[in-house]
Structure formats: structure tokens, C-alpha cells
Length: 120
Image: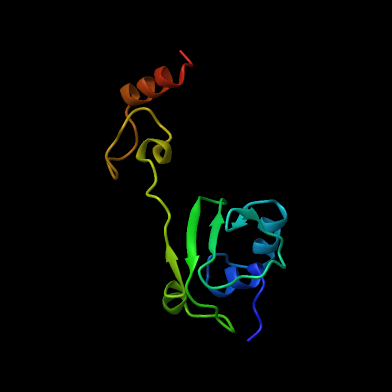
């Protein structure tokens, strides 16, 4: 079996929506294979570590190489996700912690957010 290109592999295992997105990410230096920047035509092998940095950081280990597009459920079995859990403060983007689903910030909450950002 011929070893696939990294951009095709990313598309076949549903880590990106379109092959063009994978190609542009490779050209932009957003994809690494075993710690090295990958060109779109870089070969993917079993047990390679693939790191994506856009739109969020992902680190996966290649377990299987599909010959064609896989279903989403089947695609998840073709790699092992070793992405570290996100830092909750960074993902929130605000210094004031709020419960999910608690509605819009009140006027007091907005003032605290602005004070934290240093605008007042």
C-alpha cells in the first residue's frame, strides 16, 4: 500500500474538513510530524506523532492509515488523541469566572471585566 500524504491523511481521518485546509495549514507551518514542520506531500507512517496548531492545538498518534475517506466514528479509531486538556482560564478569556449558562453579564459583571482588562 502506498504511504499517504499528510494532507490526505488529515482529511481522511476527519481532522480537517477539506483537503485544501490541510494543505494550507501545512504550507503555513501549522502541522508538524514527529516535531518537524510538514509539507503537504510529507509521508505519514504508523506511530507518527502529528501536531496541529490551528484552530486549537491537537496532538495525535497515527494508528491506522485509511485508503479512502472514513466515517467520523471509524476515523476516531485511526488515531490516538494525546492532546493535553485545555487550561480553563485561557479558554474563557476573561478574568472573571462565570458559570456556563448563567446568562448575559450584569452591569456589575461587565465593570469587573473591564477593570480586569485594565480599561478603567
